[in-house]
Length: 587
Image (cartoon, rainbow, N blue to C red; front, side, top):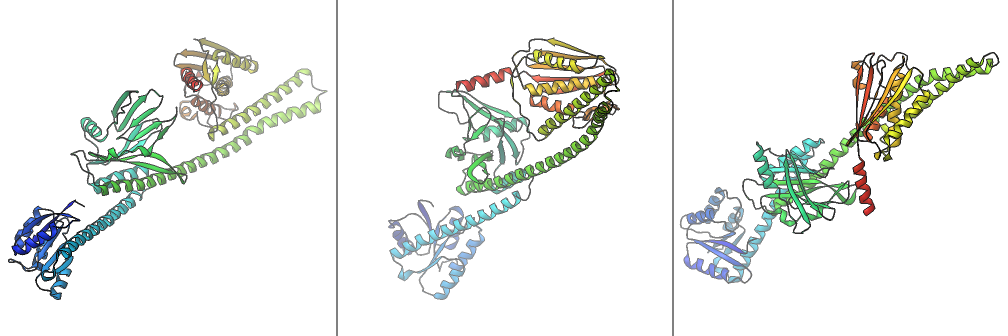
């Protein structure tokens, strides 16, 4: 409420107006600004020009009655109704009832009027009117917030939720734009929803410059502060010598607490952020029904066309909408996680079925061969010469290796499908590692195959997972040998290109049909031309997963009856791990 209340006295008696003025100006509890009019028409004009807190109205005016004045006042349709105290020289109860029905707050008889009575009536009437107006305002605000919350939460689609939220808040606050920004895992902040998009790059930059301010620290340790404007993205960073990073988006503090994650401090939303043209409130999600909240992003309202003095009730609306938006976002994320879990469950069930089918099919033939060979050796050992005995033993050994490889592949692909595979890098000499693995392959390869190893560059000090690299190598080499039934060269090339390590396996085998190549890196997928060559279709799927755990890529080239070349590119991560290791040792 204002410090000085504006009172309009409408009375044709100058003497009466002088008395009312004197009484009010002697009020020790309140100060007043007094306006006067001697007729109804002049009083109505003053009501249009000046916002009054109260009208002292005489019932008998020269141009109209007090009741007629009240009707005319309502017809003006002022933004807020003005409380009225009616004064009359007659203590007529019927007139008092009519006045009250017209909306008059109090009715005083002039003959009984004293200084204390008038002061008390004016103070009580204005305070009551103010409280009633605040109550109506609060009820209306709650109604609007409830309607907005209902619209926001009608959908469980995150994109639709955010679009509805910014549109509804813009209409609710009657501002130029409303935007939602989200904190991303890669230490950036992205605008993911806007109530209206700027048409040009210049408009967009002006908008973001208008809506976002970098709160620059006065600390001398700040050595870099920059504002990067991109298509729909905003990154603001200040690098600190203390090995921490502080970002301020409209004075919203974001603190980097370790090498891989951000901690957004919601308590640092400063009071200064609700000045000027922009208003920012955090969007925080509850965390497992605990008192701690997870900062998700923030909601920003912009009055870009000109500075706007934001009212407290508007700020309250923005805060309450952000709470409802957080609930809707959390529900949408929960639904998305549930749907993803259902999809994953279906994939796992399908995968389990494929495993059972594969095992039942792939185990039957090798086991039959092992059983037949073992039975023949047992029953006819004395009748078989040494060569035949050796042949049956080789069959048993070969089929046993095949079954062992099948079990290993099943265990590995199960870990990969369940996202349980771990990447455990150590320092390796790739040339020595692959050279040793190639010798192992030579021991089991037939004489028809010539295994060739070519090396370019220095491969010492590479950080990688020995077990995963062994799987990559053994799967590529065994495929190259297996699918070259007529023999020929199988080449392994190792190349160092500073930031990358590249190696490829090339054979002279049966090749892969074009129509089969797109699905070859999926589990249980094989080329349509493999004929009777045994296999499960897991090798390339395992290889691809192992490569991706290293942050690398894999590519395949093939020609029918001319051979296949599979190329693997791995990032040389030695510098990354050295830096991390040094940081840990320093700490």
